[in-house]
Image 1 (cartoon, rainbow, N blue to C red):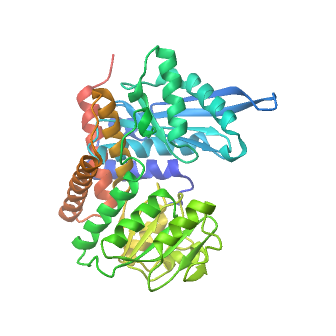
Image 2 (cartoon, rainbow, N blue to C red):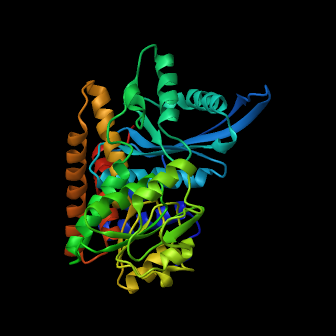
Length: 417
């Protein structure tokens, strides 16, 4: 296998594999392995000291064959067009494997939001929204929060689009505050969906929830929610880490204490709870039942894959396991639950939010949780059955299902003119 250097090349590699497996036509294969459009803008923002800085931003659409574009907006100092193209492609497959009526999109602004005041961040958000507004709308492209953004940024985006329209367009974005048309259950959706898929993976592989050990790399919203729900189901969370370091305790960590420390300090450094401090690399090598990489891409790679000793690796983040690393994990008999299935809960509840906004009829939290569980179990069962029937990995099965759905939609719609 050739060395794959970046996420977009990895994404194209996944498409190539699925196209061969599905025997797609060369024409359809060519359409699906590249993005539909890249919209790049440079725009000025007035800083609080009255100086003006120019920022770069972009919005990428991969496919619109199955519905309007759906995908997050990142504020990252090292954001690139190539990485954004990769995220847009990933969203096409994620929405397809989850049977959601969306295409794939992603966006980013090259900025460090930690270095901006709230007023500066609002000005940047409103200006960027205005620059890409030609693409956005409930029937066109529905952004959501991602790295460096959150409910407040989404509220500013929605308000800006509404001011342009002359009326409230709440369905134009998802991940908004509940008071501005957001949905209950959205914040914990990705972690809850991940926990649901993991519970079913454990059962289907003949392992029990009671006493199963869990290590979470990336103890943010997704990782922390997943850890809490697995612990409530009987698993023992023995290690967690974030960008400042990690903690390990074979008897199980005090998750409530960790949550309090995160709330007070924003990180786990010098947490002061029962356990030993460990590095991320040490956490990845722990002999646990379940390893959840939930931070950033390429955390498990060819350099450290041979050190992984988990029974199951569930991708809480997008692209945390490289193709070369996955080949090593497979040789070692480790089950990998792919990102487009494992972390599909976030976009699923975003879909629920979009539907609620369009109907102006909102569900309670129990309904959200019930519908999310049903969607995650349905997608998991389909991927698991497909994997077993064709004797391929869960990732190969998930991609074959997703790409097959997008391919059939593209073929049915044809080429205009």
